[in-house]
Length: 105
Image (tube, rainbow, N blue to C red; front, side):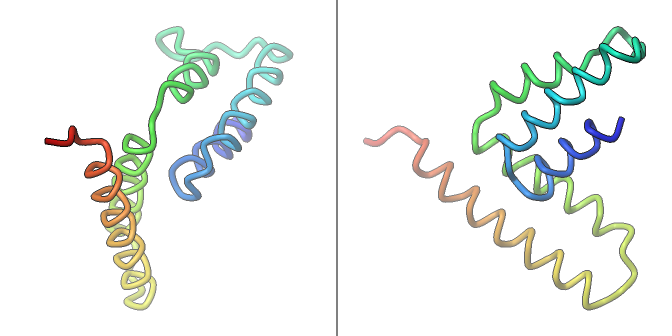
């Protein structure tokens, strides 16, 4: 579970897709040692495969959703402002990625 959480943090909050993949690979190794079953037969290998197919736009959208969820629970005003600034930066980065990805006339 630790490696899965680490991978999720690396992906959503740090935006480091490669580090997240490595963490999910480590989680897979640990899972094979413990024989832990996950609900609905969902495996860490499934997460790793899905992550490999994720592009930069998907990653930015996931980061925005993650930080927006965190924002709902933060009561400290300076921390709220910091998170809102991070969300704004991610939205700007997303707009650039989407513009670069759109077909040119």
